[in-house]
Image 1: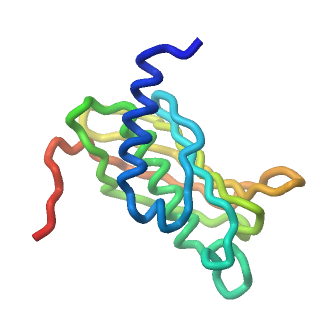
Image 2 (image 1 turned 135 degrees about the vertical axis):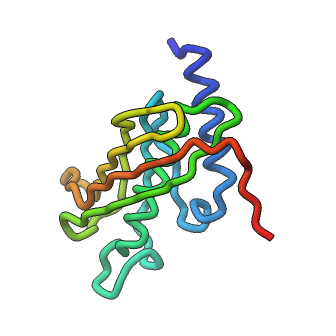
Image 3 (image 1 turned 180 degrees about the vertical axis):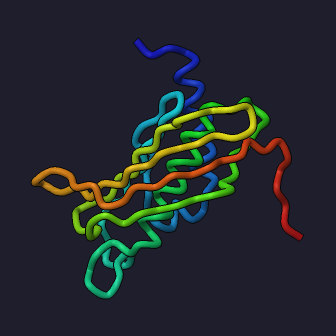
Length: 148
């Protein structure tokens, strides 16, 4: 049975995700949302690779950052928005597979600051391999950011 609060949370996160033009450009999809958790998957395309045919590190880091932000967002009130203020990624293995999946989990959710751990896996028919690990500090901002 799906709890109404869980469904509202998923809808809220999905709406925010759909407003991200860069995620559309990459072709990423939101695959899992729960309180303090988020997963984002991205299918392999040559346009997302570096010179050796591996997923580009920037793509891997982008997935990790977005998964962290949305995992943090699940712990925020309705008027708050996530803004990454610090981000560290370690690349552990080549990003080779049919897809990447970033899986984020909030380690600590304070009122204003959220600490999030992310693991990024390369997926293929044989299974999955951990290719990157990241830690993010995400601020809960109550101000809408505008440029210009």
